[in-house]
Length: 251
Image (cartoon, rainbow, N blue to C red; front, top):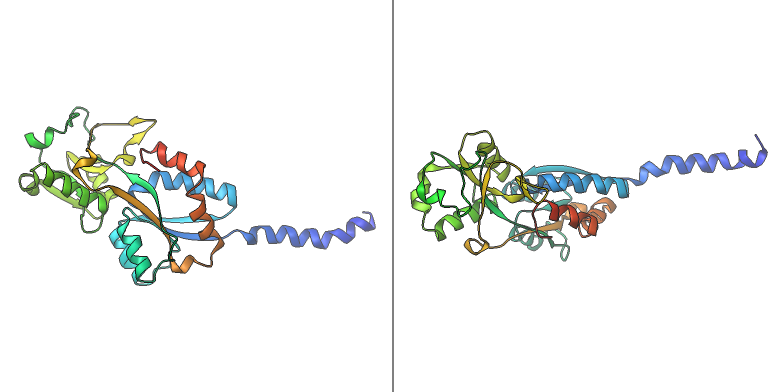
């Protein structure tokens, strides 16, 4: 081997060793309704930056309690805009980092084809035993479901039939497994290729509930993390926005 090549070997070895060291893991708390799109976004993020987003999915209210008690999350993608704002106010999140990454849509869905009609009249007929929702105190989609039923004048009639899941993911599980004939879930859970991929559904008019604005925020534990800061920026890219839109959200 020529002497000039030998002189370069130490520097080359140092460079090769340091490349993986530049990549970091970022701990991300993600609202359960955003499971599908966030898995795809995380894969794209790792491919483009080398950083790995370690994802934990669950109910927004439960994440709030965990973050307030010191959970090691660095980025939080909530199912509402109020919880991230509260964390900012309480000093658990970086001021000015919060933004709306998606606007969610509520849908009444059944795994059974033909069970839910296009106008949601099935709710008035009441020809079912159980209807699933996410716990309204923990999950904004559950709160939106209660709001919609109340505006329709059906809350009292449907109350005895309600089964609550801790998160929108659990509410979806109740319906998909047949433990409830229908339920209020996030459109993203049953939407693919521009249409409902299975069962039957009614798109709940947005006039029946408050907008489901979903905010992301950089948490205090992630303020010095390059991976956390880059993930927040990546969520605003055209690539991430295309994924978000493909699941039925409005970016």
